Length: 217
Image (cartoon, rainbow, N blue to C red; front, side, top):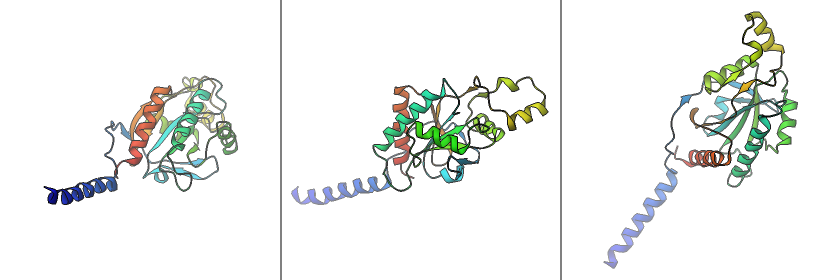
């Protein structure tokens, strides 16, 4: 029996190493939708696109810097999520995951303003980036891509020319109804979950994000 133990032990070790090299199994998460291609800019004026994010899982949310009530708790929850990530994400190089906050008020939220907002919430630009585009592009991505609400009361009953002018020039009203949830996106650009900002949901999001990042490609 002793003569057989060494080969068996070596085979067991080899199998374990092979599994480790392949990564963990992918988490059992729903496949909710596939995001369309998009190209935005970040708080430093750099391209932030579906192509640049592909290959690693990431988390999206939606806010605007002048929002006085609902957005600060959302930003604070994102700070908490970033803190959890920093416990295992390497301190240098391209991080294996990304947090992206899309502003829904690009008329107000210039790159400079987004940088100031990020600094207020200790955003590490390696991990947590802010994205902006024109309002129409943003609205279409939020509602048709991420399947999240974005409703401007000031544009509900106006003519199309008035709406187009407002979209280009008018900041969104403070009472605009918009999503306050996090959306988890996998390496292929597929939505894999939608999460609230309470501590339990945030823990679940962090666990799912890490599981995706560590899963076998």
